[in-house]
Amino acid sequence: MADALKAKGNAAFSSGNYEEAIKFFSEAIELDPSNHVLYSNRSAAEASLQQYSKALKDAKKCVELKPDWAKGYSRLGAAYYGLQEWEEAVKAYEDGLHIDPNNQQMQSALNDAMSAKNRPPAGGGLFGPDALMRLAMDSRTRHLMDDKEFQGMLQGLMANPSMIGAHLNDPRMQLALEVMLGLKVAGNKGDVFDGAADAAAAEEGEAQSRPQQPAAAAAASKAAEPQQGGSSSSKAAEQQPAQPGPEVEMSEEDAAAAANKKEALALKAQGNELYKARKFDEAIEAYNKALELYDGDVSFLTNRAAVHFEKGDYEAAIKDCDTAVEKGRELRADYALIARALARKGTALVKLGRLEEAVGVFNKSLTEHRTADTLKKLNEAEKTLKEQKEAAYVDMEASTKEKDLGNAAFKEARYPEAVAHYNEALKRGPPKVNPEAHKLYSNLAACYTKLGAYPEGLKAADRCVELAPDFVKGYSRKGAQCVELAPDFVKGYSRKGALQFFMKEYEKAMATYEAGLLHEPDNAELKEGIMRCLQAIDRIAHGDASEEEIKDRQARAMADPDVQNILMDPIMRQVLDDFQTDPRAARHHLQNPEIHRKISKLVSAGIIQLR
Image 1: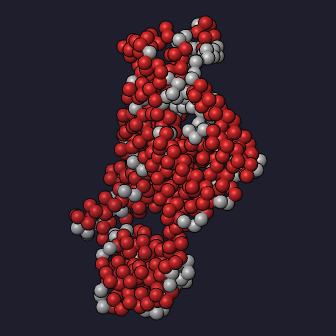
Image 2: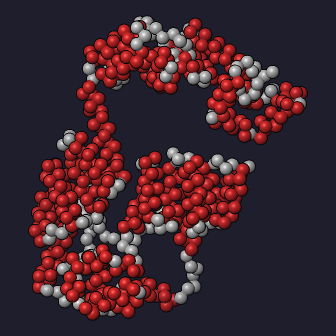
Image 3: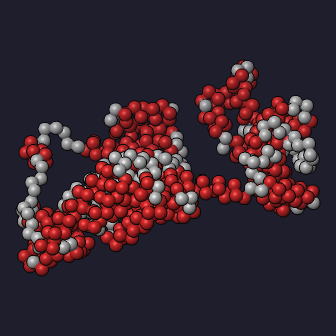
């Protein structure tokens, strides 16, 4: 019933009928209050109606029910985004990306939230202490801080920001707004792309634009847009391009500096074109000239670093990146620019084989600004570094020695010592280079069985069977207590079955023993394991087990999705009722193979007892 209501809600949502979708999802939640997907869907519908507080409540419930589901954090981030709680939105998206690092949609939403968080505030926020400091520090507006008329204008706007329209024609205010909003005199495009991924591409520079909302919040915005037929005069005003302001009087020093910056940006653009044409020496020369004219743009250095990288001069690339980071901090540049310089340095370090340094630099880059590309490079560097360390540690002679020490410790019942020796033997002789590694895992499973550490033993036995599927003792290890270290190993299945039996997972143990019999049909230990499992299941089914054991068995069964589906099946509910009230109908039901299988499952799980 809940699934049917969920389907109706999805259909209503797809057609844009969000209120009806919320109604269906709410009814489904009443029937199935533990279904995290229903809360996620209702949160999306509420966000589409700009009911962000309700959307946030449902998103939190979704995450509470399923904390390892990335989409729940996406819903949480969208709700916070709609409420303009940027810090919380960023944290929600980052939490989701920890679970699903390759989720491009969530990464895009995180970038949007970060942009919104860092966006200069509108209205009165323009005239805060930070904005006034920018006016005092910039050579173009420093003189305005001594202008009493302009100071009076600023004080009036601090008290009533809505009056800003009356001053927009004043050249001083136009210049002040340009500085306070961080607008650029000339377009700053053409930052060279990190050569490690695509040497022929060039990326756009740091042009600022208003970010789009994440999916849920964007849908809500569409729902709130006014209908056609609004004021034509207001539309015309919106579409009319902004008129350029009058020229601002500048000192000779400032005019020369502005001319140098303009020429430097032109040289940067020229360098980018030369880079794309793979004329690397000419590109470096262009960047060098740009830096001589103007050293206030970090991208000149990061672009030159990319060119050095493509030429294979990794040390020069690293040097430029270090200078870019130092200069960026001096200029208080955007964190994304500093992160980019660090990421490029890390890429160059990887090429030089200095992986430990690269890992540290990638981590620093991610603390400045988190991107999927840098995270991917970090993961790759860490993986390669780990493989190199493991390969350098391989020593088959030392592995054999550790195995012998483990065998001796096992025979003397010093099981913790045996575990340590077997693990060391695996480090010295991992499966990649050691054809006998499965025997070490089998011996580990035997040690863990003796210690009562069944989950650890199960993992070791699983690894044993994975490496050697025809290693019968590995299956038996999950079911039998035979742990001798004989030279004729047939232990993979046996050890796996033994551990499952000790963990009271009797059906799984039976399946393991049966898999082992496919490789050795006459193995007495595997057959004995199956009999032991059948006896345990029969004892529980007839109520001969202790009350504590029965409760434990039922609790394990209720965690099994198959058992949950059987108990929620309306047909099976009717069948179970017939078993209590109509024995004749019950016998008829058992003739159905599928019903018979489900009843057997419930009996073996201890849900149904035979009296």
